[in-house]
Length: 246
Image 1 (cartoon, rainbow, N blue to C red):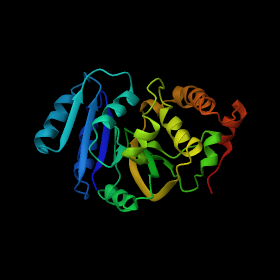
Image 2 (tube, rainbow, N blue to C red; image 1 turned 180 degrees about the horizontal axis):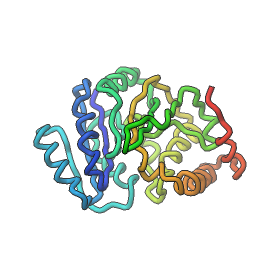
Image 3 (spheres, one colour; image 1 turned 90 degrees about the vertical axis):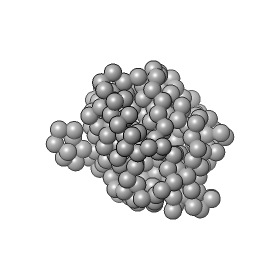
């Protein structure tokens, strides 16, 4: 089946080439690839144009100012042609060429509406692995502590967005957590873990910066829990720092 991959990017000229190549080299051959560029000023569009020439007819591009990553993702969702939709940001890449093959295989079961897997982070300077992020032990109850699967590993059926809405664009980094809450806690959508390291993420992105990890992350998760009528306290969010996956 056709899988839409949306790359939201702005000023990632140094890494966007690797991102695009990792999509184009997937063994799954029915890919709808959309790049949403937020009016980059660092030469990103020149790199993307080169990639369009290298892979003619395989990359759709929108480049214009936006109000953040979630508005960019929503633009992609609205024009997506795939039955399945996922994201791959402009400083990340698929860990191996068979990721979408595995996504397609798992989503062949029409009863499966969402899947998520694992990711790892690398240092942009040394390419050294700095963190593994697995969702193997995730349960929806952990959302109440602010713990969610890694968003870059999330793939959803397109119909999900028609029924439950797009990402909320007034979040800075927390709209993906809000989406997990809306789907799994509010609407009871059952996710399936794909035991696969799906994405190599480069540290230094907005959500990995220390201030946003500590302050913005907690504030927006608290807001999302409240807006979705999930009982929450500052202490309940702090408990996730003590959580150790099995």
